[in-house]
Length: 221
Ligand SMILES: Nc1ncnc2c1ncn2[C@@H]1O[C@H](COP(=O)(O)OP(=O)(O)OP(=O)(O)O)[C@@H](O)[C@H]1O
Image 1 (tube, helix red, strand yellow):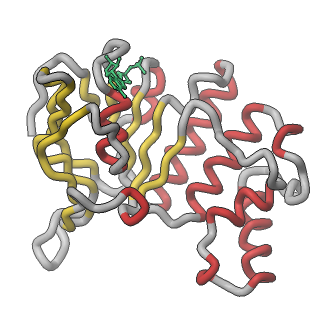
Image 2 (cartoon, helix red, strand yellow):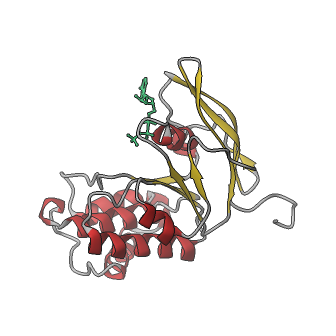
């Protein structure tokens, strides 16, 4: 609890997702800074729709009720670009027309620093994930694990208030998957970011170490 009485972290207050008059899911949860809430459930149960709802870009075919708060501030109805949410997907979605450094610069708002400072911040961010010297590289020449690390640093440089992860490790092989998820969870923890993770992999949920909501089962506030 913050001094002003507001709750720290991300608060999903009875968020329900409906499609064609049917409730797909209903979730209540509090995700503390640095903690991970894992969402699991069968294909088509509405996990991605829930993330889209939290991010503010739910397709109008769905309807939603409930409230989303970050550090006690109501985000319900706030436009996606103003929510301060960082997302990682199955595909790293790096811009193919930009260098690796250009992709990371994209994450930084121009107001953050002068141009040479911005470049140094990006170089440091690359070095932090063992990609020192990769600034000018074409993203197409990177391995899957390298692309995942660039995507992570790009999202962290955008200074998000919370992270939404939609199966971001599922295309990586077992060893890389384990390394990448530890990196993502440890960076989120050190940045104090609440995380909502959608996954089909129990090992992801175990590594995340937080609460798990299984869609289709009862949830409690
Ligand atoms: N734009 C849309 N319009 C109508 N129905 C949709 C739309 N997008 C998804 N759906 C349907 O909504 C339901 C939930 O989809 P969603 O993608 O959230 O499921 P999911 O749990 O993430 O599935 P998966 O694990 O396969 O990714 C599914 O039945 C899907 O077919």
